[in-house]
Image (cartoon, rainbow, N blue to C red; front, side):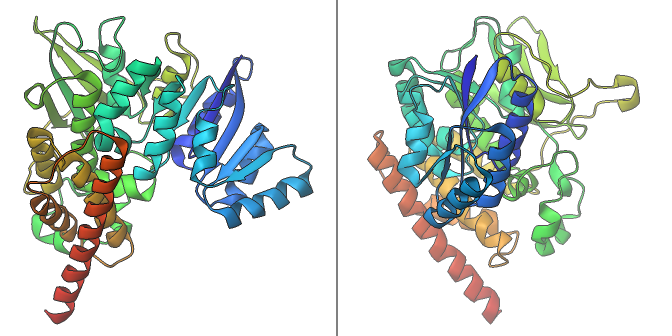
Length: 399
């Protein structure tokens, strides 16, 4: 019996993780759950899965959760704040930690789990993009095992030669190819992208995801962040990493070997597949997801991404190629820009425009490898991005 902690439990990844865990109650026990501020959502999960600990980032939400648990007679210890989430991630009895907190907020809890030597299932891109070198070094130092949950990186992990481990250069690999659906605007006329709304951007054709990652999929920033992640996880340079659009979302990524062989991982576009793989690794457990009907699919299509349509992918490739502070800056500026877009304070073309402005402003800044330097750079980039959003909004008003 292994004890499981799920960080970001009320999100899509968190709920899917708990769905898989419930199918294997003889092997997994839910030790703790965390969320940002959704007290009612976390309470329902506490009723279903009976964790010993529940933590909310927001203190007022935590107080609501205490009351709900008390009324329901649940013996659940409720905490609040960032320190409590980090303590849960590093709990001595935790065996596996699902890191699914969206955005840069996931960095410190992920780092806490790594430094506690846990088996960390990384579902959020941002910690690896912000602080990939630090996380990988700490994983090696403290004996943590990292398993990626992103469907693309999990697919790569499954296709690598055994006994592959994240942080090690894979043997005999020529190239990693990340697949992308192309999102909701793959065929939209370029002129119409000027007037894209948040409601349109979050309507992904194949996957059910949260709002932020859905917008990232529409702009293909998610694929750009995944390129940077792949460089961190598998220690390969930009020249050995590629992206191809695959609208069917059945092939989740491809590993090309030096002998010309290509191995691909296929499956339904359902996050329970990579989650089940990671929870069970190196075994295999039932996920609740059926197999693909290849005859019904009929054909697989592939096409190169057009960077005029997806300028965020171009910016991410620049960040990967130039390195230094740019991956962290890219991530921070994107979070601010996407949030502004979702709040109708920034138009859709403004997302890459703001990101590029912040990246250009970062020229000459030093890239510190310690946590304080990483967090300071993140805060600087967010401040510059916030000013850029405001300036663009004022320009639109006066236009």
